[in-house]
Image (cartoon, rainbow, N blue to C red; front, top):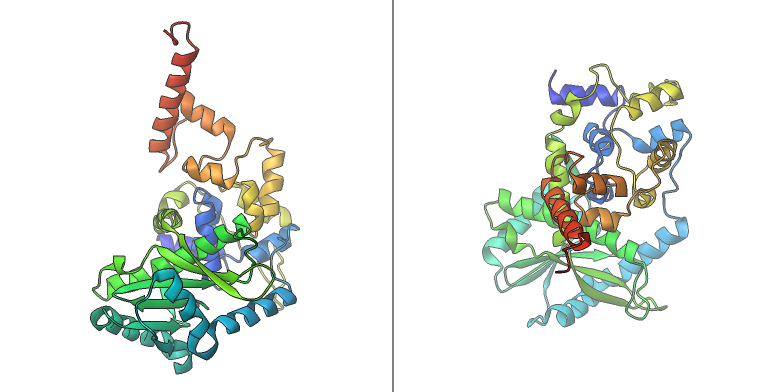
Amino acid sequence: MSTEHRLDALRGTTPPRPHDARAIAALAANPGCGRRALMDGAGVDKDAAARHLGFPAPFGQSPFAITRGNVFEALVKADGCAELLRMLRELLGLPIAEVAYHDVENVGAHLRHAHTRALIDRAARDGQDAGTLYDHPLLTLEIAGHTAYLEPDVVAFQVGGRFHIVEIKSFAVIDGQADPSAVAAAARQAAVYVLALRTLLEELGHDPRQVSHDVVLVCPENFANRPAATLVDVRRQLAVLRRQLTRMTTLDRLLAGLPEDLTFDLRPDDDGRPTRPVAELADALRRTTARYAPDCLSTCDLCFFCRDEARQEGASDLLGRQVRDELGGVASVAEALGLADGVRDPAEGQEEIARLLRNAERLRQECLSPSGGS
């Protein structure tokens, strides 16, 4: 059976859930999780699965937060993005007084992607000295063989032959400081847009490096609604995202270790209500390998199910995402020590970090030995 048919069988009788930028960015938040890679590759509705299992995730913005975000975005983009241009002049040192403005959304949804391609292609060829803002461009990314259409509320800004992604968020920057988790989530999401725009340029025959890895993050400053802009380097997020998407294109390796009849199908009835026994679905999920971390509570719909599973397995030494990222996806203290001692074989992509951990352990032993200080 082909990989595509295996993934369809995993999903079952429901249509695949489309990926948006938030979902793709969440892939980069936990690149070592085989369970998430399989479920997202198959397009499984993880939120519906979590609710059926009795572990609904606490996601979703309040109506107040959504309204606040829409008001702030409208302020930044008012009058052809005049306020945004003011900030870009200051942040990027633009020598131009004004720029062209294209709202790609005005052409209609069915033409947006083609129109985006044409505008970006023309700018990459002829716009070396021009400045242009592209509002609501429609970009795409291939996710495990499926095309994901990204409909960002961001702006792609091109000047002097370089493109910048502008991400507009409504969380506040107080005295120059913002919530680190909110900034990290914005950076991961912006990295998705950078990768999509680079992919588009490459498809059009241009140098993808024309898209800067420095994204412009616009947030309200202090307790007012006045927007402020700063540059955020997303190279690390890009590297993690590329690794995870590559991992998803080789899902056959993950599928090879699963039973042929394994499925995550909820078996919905005519009204869309799941009919599959909860215990049966839970058993199917436990046949896949998860890498739960405390940070999953803010990024994955299955977070509470996986947390409960980790607790039942006695995993009390799980590492947070920042440490896990530094260690190449190593999930726990026990795993790190096993790799350092050489008693645990590194997973795919962990070879280099395993070598570094073994070297660190060797140096530690040398320092602790009686002759170590001589």
